[in-house]
Image 1: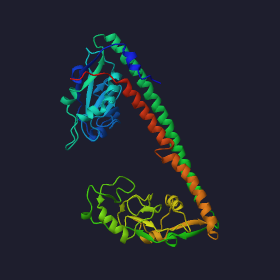
Image 2: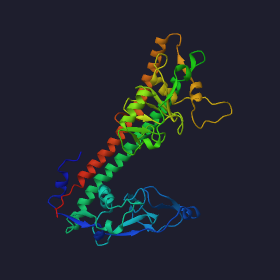
Image 3: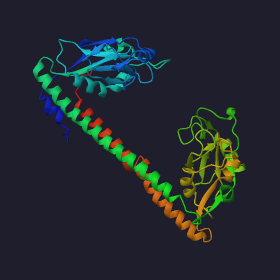
Image 4: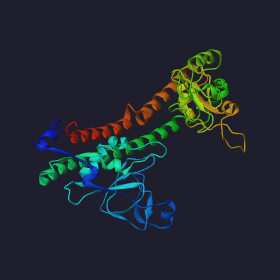
Length: 401
């Protein structure tokens, strides 16, 4: 654990001098590269361009022992890259090379630029193709501890690097372990889900969804009735289960909800196109859904629990006419799709058994997918812990101009 006054103790009174990045490093653009160049010249040298991962591998290199780069254009503009040894630097990647007369630890600069990611992003332009001008980047001010005493400066930098490299390695190891655990749990979850929802002949009665309830959908919303902002989110097939990008008025929502079909809390919305059969539990929050593309089975839960339906939809074999291929779920496909219902001769016992199955699957679902519980949350917390300590280590004072 790093003490809150650690950086003060490490500096031990040393002055922090803020210098322009262009004063202590040389910033240059890499060479032009294309996918055709890579495909016609395959090799072992990674091509570092507009992303943190190599664009490909080529048989020549233009950079050696100059690991720091910054993406110049595109969606990842301003991202920091690190590539050791020989590689090919593309034209969408700036080299940030420490000048020979400067006593700066290269890993110190790398971690520092990562910490200053927001400052670098602020230098970028986002009109048209996002871009980072080298002239603007050179003006970025970075903190150097006591540069007038190179030996002490490097000692301070090296200690900061040691701590952050250790944290980086530990975070990577823990993330890899947690990711492997998450993958294993997801496979385990899929296995038990399939087992719990698979029955031998005679153990269940196969009912069609049409026997469970009617297929329902919302009233059609016309494009001119939507806007980019508004009171009520309108989910289309492309935003189903995600963030909405269209809205309708409160007045229209209240009118349509009162006059036409609208899901009840807990009913399971299904995507009828796009990713066929994707299911979302309706939470009751005011929202409207695209007709025909997002539908639901009207279910009073007298025979089948909504949550049981939800898990069944994940493995459902949707009804398709013989010789046909499924491009969307029409009402007929839905109504003729069969679902296994246990103990149909004893409705109370059937619902208890369904609830038991749901309870087991809920636990697996929470463990594998919940962002507030389970393993994904652990992975997120490890990354935040690393960022917290990195921020603490680079919290150098800066005189106000």
